[in-house]
Image 1 (cartoon, rainbow, N blue to C red):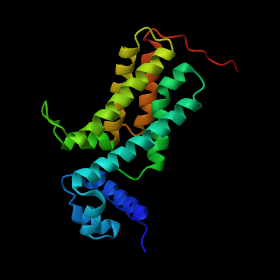
Image 2 (image 1 turned 45 degrees about the vertical axis):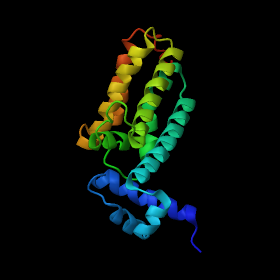
Image 3 (image 1 turned 90 degrees about the horizontal axis):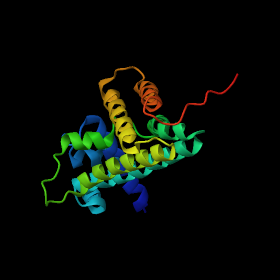
Image 4 (image 1 turned 60 degrees about the vertical axis):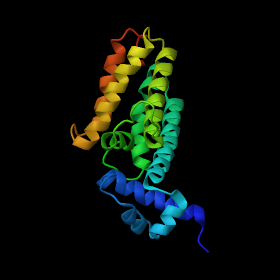
Length: 201
């Protein structure tokens, strides 16, 4: 007898690879089912709809991304480095995650219009959760690092972070994560935060 949880995971893995490599709109549930080695009936039994499948993929992705970021923050050696740890997390997350062209949340937002006021969209709620988590955590880390304007510092780092994710799709610069981290560091060093301590040799 097949294991329902393993089947569910297989469907999620297959659909995630297709959605974020070939596009959400262009990938039908029949292709996702075929890639997972299950019938369309089985896919619908587990998820009910394509939107529910996408929502589960994003929820799983958000949980894993958050764990990578928490680990990167914990490994940082100074308050300033904890702010920049978001770029270290991108490196470890992308090394462990399935192949995608770029950020799954930005990809979803680019293909799916924001819901109109008063309407609900559980998929877009996951995009908002990702945005809120990144913004709130960056602001908190900037405050802990002693920056005089944590909100503005976080907004500047978020702008660089978004640029890094977009550059992964564009393909240039060649190493956008390293370039983004360096750029974010320069921003922090001129933003009025605590002085950078250079270790003696």
